[in-house]
Image (cartoon, rainbow, N blue to C red):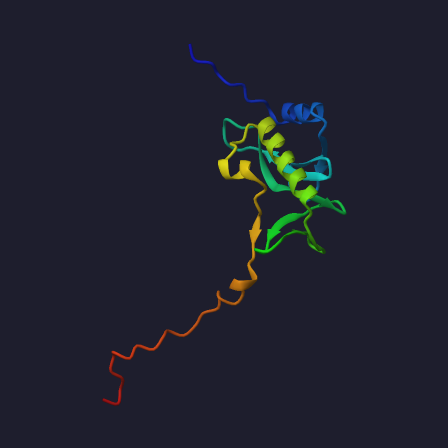
Amino acid sequence: MAVKSRVPSFEQLQQELRASAFEVTAYPGVPSGVLVAKHGVAAVLVPAQEKGAAARIAIHPGVLVKGEVARLLDRGYQKFMKTSQYEIPATAGQLHAIHAFTEELKALTGEDCLYNESLGTTSDLYRYDRLKGREATQSAPARPWKLTGGH
């Protein structure tokens, strides 16, 4: 006989998170969002619209910097924590904390755990300095095999 998995409500999920030593508080920046924090790392959850899940992540996990969840920025040579006011280099301890927090949060919320994310911390943004300026439009290269107006 098939076993049905139990999907908790958003309120039940919040109680489960509190029982697992997460701090759960209302987050005014996102409508009906809650800030879930543990060990200096936080994420914002909102109720899921689709069936089969209690919540979805509105703001991805990051280190708390002055009450704001910092985004993880990868510049190719180093990772940084970026907020609206600050951009600070990420430490190995912070990356380990984000990784552990994300795995535990996904296990409790029932989200899919992807293989590449299980290998280490993945960034929200990728900004490589070697590629800076390449996004600008450039003129088409000259085509010497085509005749121009003079011949």
